[in-house]
Length: 329
Length: 251
Image (cartoon, rainbow over all chains, first blue to last red; front, side, top):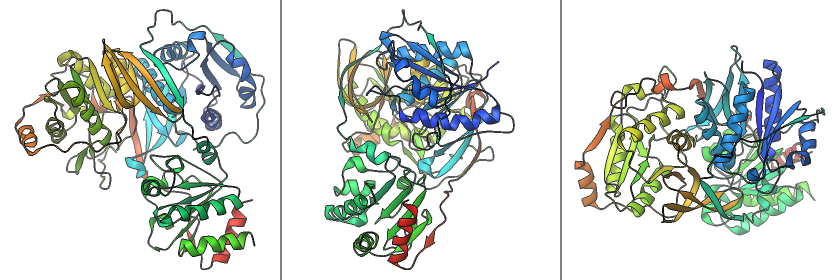
């Protein structure tokens, strides 16, 4: 009998549990309440690592964390991790498995699903339980134009979940988490892919933008890099970060690592100020989960005015300096 | 080097219709070859030198256009998996159908190249699921193929956290991201040759598949709807009001 919700706790290349895991914890809390099934976590890592992050699990209120530890699992490898995960899943038989839709998650999850001959819904942005007690996983398709709610008739029902869609748990739910250690059965498994080198991305500001409370973003309407300097000023005053559309990055007036949208970052700040952004679907999917959106554009027909809370039709080169003055005289 | 390149014909996303069963009505839609797959074909042709490269797709009869495009770009032949019974397939069923065709008819390969994701579904799952089904290693998020030597492939992976260089034993499956270059435009002679090329077609019966398409899919679309956001637009008339709203929202 399948029961329980299992969350995959990904350890990233910097040696931290990925933030998306704590978002999964929040999403799972709602599902757990509806299903009346417990939530537990799975971590695959080097020997001794789990103990160092135990507090994080306790704050999420997990009863159980399954820790598959081994020196050979110190860094991610598709074959070894898939084997370790599949063995554990077969043993505990969860009804639902949620995995963060990160690079690692999207490499690992289909390998697991295919081995278990079960369904996997990719990159979900909403999760619910339907009247039959099934996981109803909703995801954008066709570049975000349409949403599809997908059901899975096999067990476990698997879904990968887009980062930064669910907020991390607001309050800590402290519990005494039991860590159940497992030895992986990977002796005969060939490590088919070998890591030769890794060069860490130098863009540390990327994470700051992703988790900024205020984002001031510019599009092609900012025209030049000087236009973006003006946005930097406003962002600084609001204690926020500057983002950009793909169009602006393509024009070379904003750095590529500031790109927000389908092929860039997904952000969900408290306040998003869109300056000179027309609002293509590709951009909207990267920012529409922001709490409040203020749009400034000189074209009253720009689609951005359909996805905002406050709109103002005007020239950004007049409006932004005026806002800086008004906010901080 | 014998290479299989798995491609997908995707609908033009500005014109979408759905069937009663909430699956996509693909017939009659404007179609293109999935952008990542165009690079998969380019890389395969560069490595395989034409005749040794087979382009493979699953879809309705019209998907042969994508195969002809791949042949014009330099692939040696095209294989189309087409059957009404394949329709409504999710990534699992698709990977099973493609794997069945590979096992039965195309098993003599060194490398399989897929696109990292399709522009319509964006699941990025079919490639890894094929690799698992065939029991071969996978490398996802490949930006560049460095070399193939002594039965090993070395590639550069582009990840959010940085750039990895990895090596895998062949046979293997790799998933290509879009390249930073413009794909070569085929010459008119190549387009003509592709128009006349013979496309091999396999049906569910040819592949001895029973559970396939929607029937063989663990997942199904229960409903689809247009994206609605929580934002209710209000257009303001003065900059002062906008400034007040910024203060109100930024607490």
